[in-house]
Image (cartoon, rainbow, N blue to C red; front, side, top):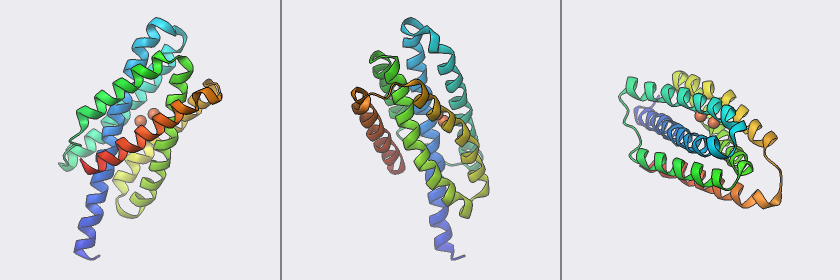
Length: 178
Ligand SMILES: [Fe+2]
Ligand SMILES: [Fe+2]
């Protein structure tokens, strides 16, 4: 393969791992905040949220290990992801239990769309990174399914779905630049 093309491909692979690493940190902070509020207001869903949080911690470690192993820097906006995730988690949880599920559904719908693109790319360029991304996909699908089955499908929640989706897209885009 052309050496210059190879360098470009490896830069793209690094970007993918970095974005996913940052995204998992965002997810961890969303769930931590939602759990914090749910412990007071919606005790019955705490266990499910804790389950999802434990998945996100595993996902974060998967990408963190890969970054460390390859000596790739993490996203410069890591603190922003953590703060943004915590804010999103807190605000959605205060909007009600249904907003928590709409938030999950919205994020995972956006994320899964990106994962499919990433998997397609990595299948051609990096088997190890492909395996890492593939290892989180089933969990994210399960989260999306939980968001859809637990959330009430009412037009009132459409704005929340839209805002969360746009914030997720913006955060993903920003992470490819920072
Ligand atoms: Fe995740
Ligand atoms: Fe997830």
